[in-house]
View 1: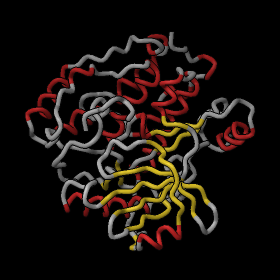
View 2: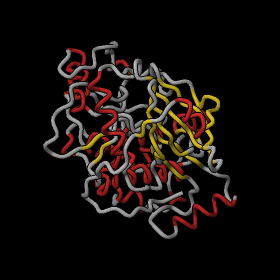
View 3: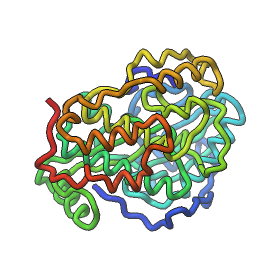
Length: 346
C-alpha cells in the first residue's frame, strides 16, 4: 500500500441505466495451461510488477490476431488469504460484466488454470498519466480534458454501483495524438457529439480494477486500507470507502496534474508494511494528520484560475459529504471556460 515511488477519444458512449447495479453475467473460465497457450501467445513484459506473484504481459489472441494485454496472478503468491482470493474472483466477475465504457479498459475474459489466473484485457493506447507527467507538463487544455474524462468514467462506474478504490496517476492511461493527425481528428469528431473539448485530442481510459468493488450506502467497513498513500481519502484510513473516496483520489490527480505536486506532504504517510489494517495506530495517525493538513491552492496555475482551485478544493474536502459527486463536478464552471483562456503552469 505504501507508495513505492509514484509510479512503480474520446467521450463516453455506453448503454446503461444510471443506478442499476451490475450483476455477474460473465464468469471466470477454467482452462489447462496447454489450452491457454493454444488460445494466446504470451509476449514480453509490459512493465515490471511490484506485486508479488503478478506479471503484466503483451499477448496475441491466436484466433484472430487481436493484440491485448494479460495480467497473470499465481494462486499461491498473489493473494494473502483464501478470502482475498474469493473476494477478488467475485469483484472480477462483476467487472467483466460491466457494459463497454469508452473511458474504461475492457476485460475480454478471465481464465483460470491450476496454477494461475489470466486476466485478458484491452491493449490501451498511450501511456499512463505518471509517465506523461514525468516527460513534460501537459497543457492546461489537455489536463482539463483528462480530468473531465476521469470524472465521466467515475460517473458511470458509480451509477452502476461500483467504486474503483485505487484511482491514481498510474491507473489513468492517456493518449494524446499529434494535432491534426487522423487520430486527433477522429477524437475531435467524437467529442463533437458529446461534451468533450474538441480542441484537446486527449483520450483517457481507467485501468486496474483489482481493488474495485460493489458499493451501496449500507456497505460494511473495509478491514484493510487499500490504495496508494497520497491518493487515499481520509475516511478510507478508517475503513470507509464510497464514491466520494474515488472523488478525493480524482482531486489528487487533478491537483498533481495541474501543479506538479501532491496536495499533502509525503512525510504524513509513514506507515510500514503490514500496518494497513483498519484501526491500526498507523492508519489512525495518518487520518488525524490529514484532518489538519492545509492544502495550498495558490500554486500555479490554480492561483490564476479560481474555478479550477474551487473545484479541486471541493473534491479534496476532508469530509466525504462535502465533496461533489462525479456528475456534480462535471457541471462545474471550470469545464465551461474557453480553452484559450486557461492559464498555464509557470
